[in-house]
Length: 243
Image (cartoon, rainbow, N blue to C red; front, side, top):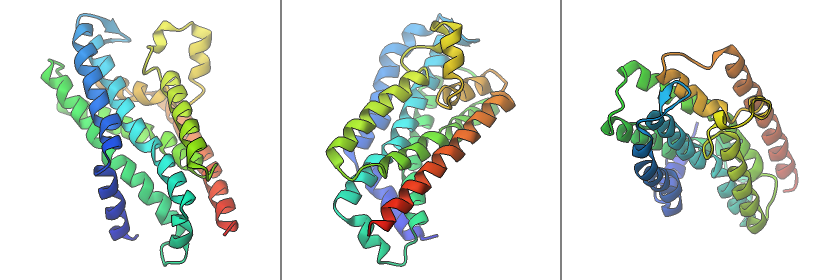
C-alpha cells in the first residue's frame, strides 16, 4: 500500500473548501438550527434531538464518501488516471486511496456531530457512542463504493456532477435524512428497506438505543457493498481498456 499517495489524497480533501462546507459546516448548521427544537419529541425510540443528530452525522459522512466519485471524474477528464497507470501505483490502490480520503473527512463529521449532540444534553454510555459511530461508518460502505462506480460512468465532468448531485439527493431521501422514514406509509418504508441507504442512520440509532440493525440489516448492507463493488470494478476495467 502506497501510504505516501494516500497521504496526498487525504491532504487534498482536507484542504478542499467544498468538502468542508458540505461535510462539516452544512450538517453542523442544520443541526444547530433544527436539532434543539426537537429535544422534546420522540422518534423511533430516541429523542428527536438524538434522532436528528444521527441524520446529520449520516449526511456528513455520506457527502464525504460519495463525493469522491466527482473527484474521480475530474481526474479522468484531465488524463490524471492515465498518467497514474504509467507509474507503479496499482489501480486498486488509487480507488482505495479515494475511499480513505473520503472517510478522512467523513469520520470527523460524525465525531463533531456527536460532540455537539452531547453538548446539547444527549447522554449515553461511552460504549454506545462508540458503537453508534462505528455502525454509521461501516454502514456507509455501500455509498462509498457506489461513489467510485459513479465516478467511472462518465468522463465528462459537467454531466457527471449533475448526476452525482441528483443521485446524492435521492440517496439522502431514501436514507430518511430529510424526512423520517416513520412518516412514510408502511409499504413505501418496506420498499426503502430493501436498499442499503436507510440502514445507515438506522444502524447508528439502533446502537444509541442499545441494540443493532440485526442480521437482516447487516446482510443488506453487505450485499449492496458487494454489488456496487462489482459494478465499480467492471467500470474501472472498461476505463483501463480505453487507454
